[in-house]
Length: 441
Image 1 (cartoon, helix red, strand yellow):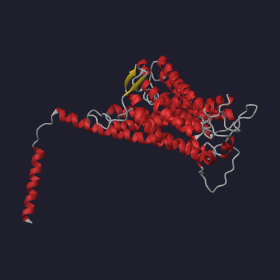
Image 2 (tube, helix red, strand yellow; image 1 turned 60 degrees about the horizontal axis):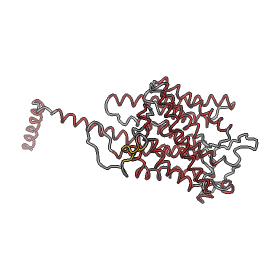
Image 3 (cartoon, helix red, strand yellow; image 1 turned 120 degrees about the horizontal axis):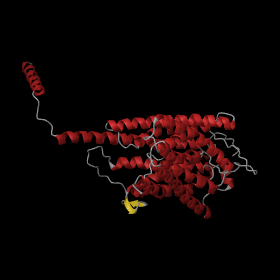
Image 4 (tube, rainbow, N blue to C red; image 1 turned 90 degrees about the vertical axis):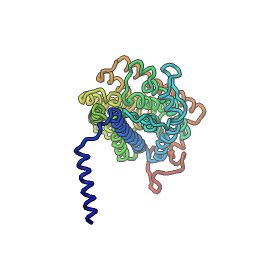
């Protein structure tokens, strides 16, 4: 016992001496390396969490699209959303990521850097990102661009054709136009700015959905012989509303994550500004869409408010790091009005877009690009060019693809299959087995 007390006393004295007498100073390189390693860990974890939030948005899209459509097509819509991610992730890993961020091959138009993604960690200083976490974040964006079309083609497109579309847009179409901006291509060299993808992601998907809706034609019963529209209500607005809230939450990975770093005072500050701008634009979009729909349809419409919130999110995505809080509210407010105007325009043109994919993502993707020039201080001419080029690329390439699929007879299901519902005709499965579903669709 006595020896133990003596030992404890000696250890305590030694610790006191070590605390009083300073050791040799740290070398500057050791200090920098420690700070770099901390930044590396913080930034990689930040982007990992952001990537998971964006991947979780797939659940939001699935809920929104299935809830806004007939119950007899629920399995089909959920299946398409799952395959958007699954097929898309594999192809983006194999070729898409390299096409988007590879070395220039044809000037500023096309790049390539080999197949797959590197497993080698970068030097752990300065907050560099590991290639794997960068891929996780970028593949989530690719899946988002692809899944936008799912709602626009709901209830009438063959599953095999949708898989072909999903593969083509994720492996080729999205990466090529993504390279134009985010890979350092011609739009980036021109001065075009799109912080988190109003155009690169959302407008591309929205205009691809518009091409699909035009080639497919409307659902049975959507328009009368005189051209007047009929509402085909969704079967579960509770599901759709939950989906919008999931998308809203996921967007806090989409926009703040696009800063790609949070370590350091400057990065932390801009991430907080981006997050607040995202919130303000979304809520302004919901309120103004509600008010606009109230004026146009003489009643407050939940689905318009939901799409208004999503439209506000799309509109702020390109410029969330560049605008003030008040400007974010204006951008979101305009986006909410554009959603209602876009829905009315599609009705006038007899184009059937069951979930409003083009008004939300296409029209407001363009608005986000233009607003970046108006409010964000970026060259307006470059913003206009980019806001035309990317939607045109998405629309034209997908129009050709869907026309080819239609020509070979595999684009649209038969009338009997559509009336029966794609869950049974395409998959022989029911989302609500055992329940009697009454539907006039």
